[in-house]
Length: 502
Image 1 (cartoon, rainbow, N blue to C red):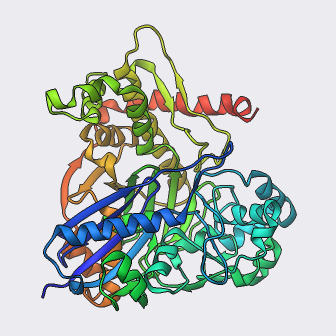
Image 2: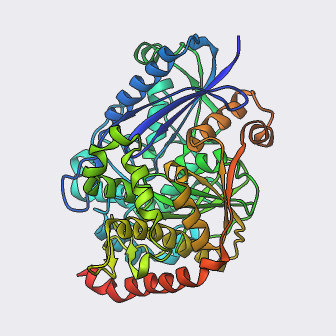
């Protein structure tokens, strides 16, 4: 019987589940959508129970889609969105909704901690600045604003850690998700108990740290009944979605870089030495002994989803007639607009912004509108704005001592040939698109395969599974016009920063 690997991705808008062969071929892939709630300004939440329900639905759908017995699955891995703490009591029950990575409710709590402990001292331990998007501030916010809940919290898990717990009953924290806590010593890969005290976080709440590919348990009878999986199937710890996507793009050596084109955007540069910059995000890679220096933005593929939702009513109405989806039609409209969108510039700060400006008050902006501009101009400017944010992060990373030559594009945005070419032209870097457009869940399957012994190491896993579909060469003839708009892009934020803050 052929042995297979199951990868589960807990994203912001959906859970994706895929079954892979050892060679990385997709046997079946399904997804189940869910939504965010926005109960107050700056708040973005999801009920972790919804994630589990989506996992059960998608796994059952995958298993029923193919004639494969669940016993053929050699191992299961889960990746998940970052900075979404799941609060559990002593019986493992969820106590509150999980605030998501772009939730900014903890602004005041973070400012208080930075002033009391010192930004430099926090950064020395964590390798990351204390910002409201991270887990730390959200936990401190819970203590201040909901003390009756905080006092009965026994463990706090990551998004994928919670699903792993539901599968096998073990409460763990994979090394790649550790960076979301500022009491995590990212150099040593361990909890810093002295910083825990300074932050006011009881050490009992911190789960056991494990390597991402380590087998942490087996599917329980209860989980098997709900998912259709076989009792006793091995479950590995899993990892941060961005790190798994980095592996799934084939990025495992120092200097290689993955570009993330999911709901959020950003880059992940693989390093074999510790390098931190407060303007960027540092996490352990899912590959032991390496780190990834990340640029994480709020305006990735979500920008185009928002554009499509609000401005594609006509395109949706004719999809069936012309055989092209609304997003494909958007590409057509943007494709006839000249590079630089004739001076229209977009700031993609649709939910504040993370790196490199770290401003929860930042706002999305279209600059340069006039009567000559069309919907096509706005679509292309939105694409270009996301690409400017990537260049901004690359500039900061290179200033911090990282070399970035070629980027490997992943996520839904990589399916757009136009958008990927725009990113190449604006950054001046070549973009490689791997064959699979499911890099995140594939990366999760690969680390699972290493954990259960299907691959001897990560080198073998990547060499057997990662194929290049196409390459986008940067066009130097477009550099000047894009560079001019890029300078406007940066100036707009500098000039509007104080106004946004008010």
